[in-house]
Image 1: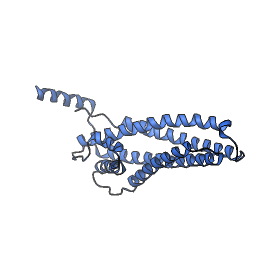
Image 2: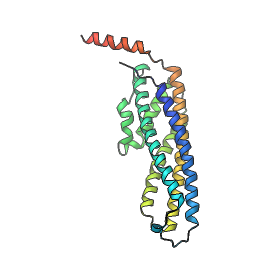
Image 3: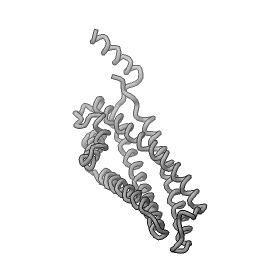
Image 4: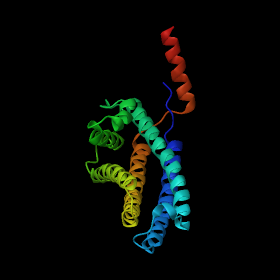
Length: 224
């Protein structure tokens, strides 16, 4: 069975985290600018007739943020899948979660509230050869992930119901808070991925390309 190296994917994921962190900082600054702009308007202003420069800036930054954010999440899921799969083959440990379910649990109602934490905890344990029992980083990651998801949904619902300038200002403030939480989450995720990669590269030996080819040949011969 061919093993896909984790180094390249991990490097790309870490670079994406840095890019998204920078974009999130810009989004927060744009949010403060938008907040200040609307806070300077009269309280009875009709928002349907108001278009401020801050709106255009926030919209452009928001689109960029959404695009890179989606790419980051997809890459993060691919990284979890490949890390789980490689560990299942190379570590000698019996993995509780399959590669598919290591990602699939993120999308199952109710169970998505705790199963992904268990998935990451298992990856952490196997990478560290069960020698590290400090799960505080994983705990903070999962707490921030759950909180970020709920805050994003709440902010979106608040934005839909915004009819007056003060309500809209509150919505902008919520977006700033949501971006601030995402900023912390992305930093923690970057540290988490880095720590797992350090342990993986230290304790897990990946076969070379030539060894992968020989393994595939042996499998073919055994089938014949």
